[in-house]
Length: 339
Image 1 (cartoon, rainbow, N blue to C red):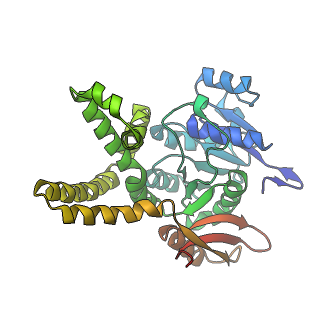
Image 2 (image 1 turned 45 degrees about the vertical axis):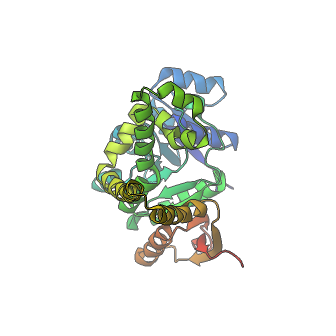
């Protein structure tokens, strides 16, 4: 997938912050012919000082490329997509790394680009920003959401093979709106809660004492409050309605805990924490069963798309996609633990 016998892969990364920069470094590390571009001149110089090719102009970075990864702030992605699409050929695969998907997917549909643009979201990151924070191994073992369109299944297959092979990530296929609902609970509301806890301490007269006593629970619970504020604000505003809906669910559970505490109902507190503990333990104790599934290369897309959406919703992921002799996925579906 990385190097076809007669045509080595040529890639570009537009926007080289933490995520885009980590993609750029990984591709460069494994020997892919890759060029980066960033609007910030200092970032371009930094990449070149590390031996990574960087173009001075976006159009030069993407010209003649087989695949282009689009990074940068969420509000800039629609314009970047249009510019990159205009500067690349019809066979060039396009994908993004933004943390919300429905709005950009709809925009790509209106631009008639969904046959070669696959919305994506690697679920990895740190509380640091910029190319200085980028690392080639950031995506190893991470979930990487891709949102296939009926007319874009060929592009989705190619991208799945690339991401699983080069980045060692787990591809999770999802509809764009489903991704935004899931990401609201998995990522965006945790940013709200972390900000609320850290913000409350910042306003408290006990701030310095809290910082002195803060141990693992406080540090883990507030880690993403250190994320650059503009990046967090863009993410939350870009997924406002799903985030507010998810926040209402979290608030309802918190109200149950507070109500039990208020009346001294220890049994309810124990029950609610036992309920919560099931999900917490599931994060580190998940078991999967491997399954392979093939589809006709040029068959009707409905069955393949339905299967992809089904496994994504079920918490499954893909670890490979072979294109010959027919498209064949290797999937891992949640399974009961061995007895």
